[in-house]
Image (cartoon, rainbow, N blue to C red; front, side):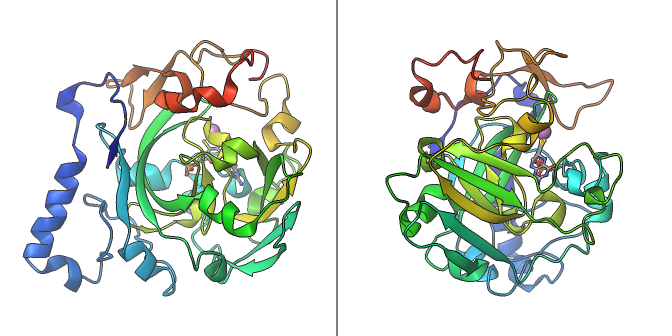
Length: 330
Ligand SMILES: Nc1nc2c(c(=O)[nH]1)N[C@H]1C(S)=C(S)[C@@H](COP(=O)(O)O)O[C@H]1N2
Ligand SMILES: [Mo]
């Protein structure tokens, strides 16, 4: 198991991952895990206790989630399940943090198809189930830092984007990868909203070497279960060293390209949001500082402000940007 760098939060605030693991073993010992119907029986990190819905996911996905092993962990307190699934940015379902949880519960995420196109040897429209046939699901506990200066620690379930890209065989012209979210105004009220300044569908992109980096994850679940719709079911990107807006949700298209793709927030406000969007405490957003962040759950009386780390603490990605002026390439 790879252990990442710990941050500066108080040890008294830390509920270690092992507490979750031992709780699971305890439940297992009592025969409660396998038998319980209200809780999925498989994964390593379960919601501690919650009255909120659980997301078992489609039958075809469950055995894959069940066999997941934790391959990446952190010595930091996990953000509680309830915060992870109710405090969301998913503008297709509204602008307020609680909108996606309140409005996405009936979002249809199975069956799901993903179109692969562009500079690649195996283009086509794939059922998600087929696209995932050869990948192993892992649990990875990552920091997640939104450009709005809040952060979480989230136990994702997914697979490295690189493992999929290798199967698809991009051509030597593939310098970038572009991702596109579903456009479906009937299901996504935010896409019908007259107040939206976003040009739908939401899109994002990575340079091919960023896409191939072993940290870059395509996630299909969180907290031991399938991905909740509000978190970007059934397939979303997670790039832990970049601001959260790069981690595009509910992906329906992956295009290999020779040229740099546009991305939604750069299209919307290019003075404020760029293509790279690497977490960087020394490059402030034009309207606020990026030097610190609120580690959720945060309140007026317990704001839990911590220092933001370069590349969100994932310094192993620094060579990807050698020689680049990161204040210019924000
Ligand atoms: N399609 C789509 N993807 C998206 C967004 C969005 O509005 N639409 N918001 C982004 C932003 S700003 C953040 S911080 C993360 C939030 O992910 P979470 O709700 O799972 O924490 O999703 C990102 N991916
Ligand atoms: Mo964000």
